Length: 118
Figure: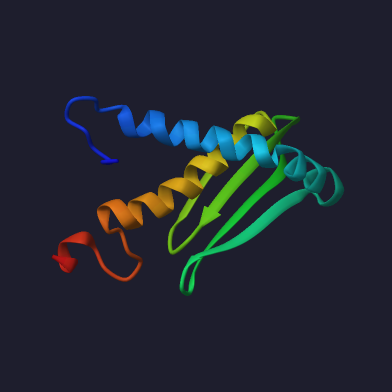
């Protein structure tokens, strides 16, 4: 699967959304229970030797309402805030997949820019 397909520019985004949805369904209850118990959920996954993705969703207050902060870190950090847990878990899964896909498909590494690797 190519990140960029000139015939269908949204192909990759549609595919990552499907993959993220499957991941979200499998773990939403686990995440909900952890947030209710601890105020946050976190996970650490080593997907390559010495390459670990840190994922976290925490409950926050925004304009007097409960929101959810999503953080995914692996050499760089992706963060967003969501009004629902369902959307937070969906974006969490997209960020996790995106980090790995960028590394393997485009060659985004933590130690060098793409131009310096060529």
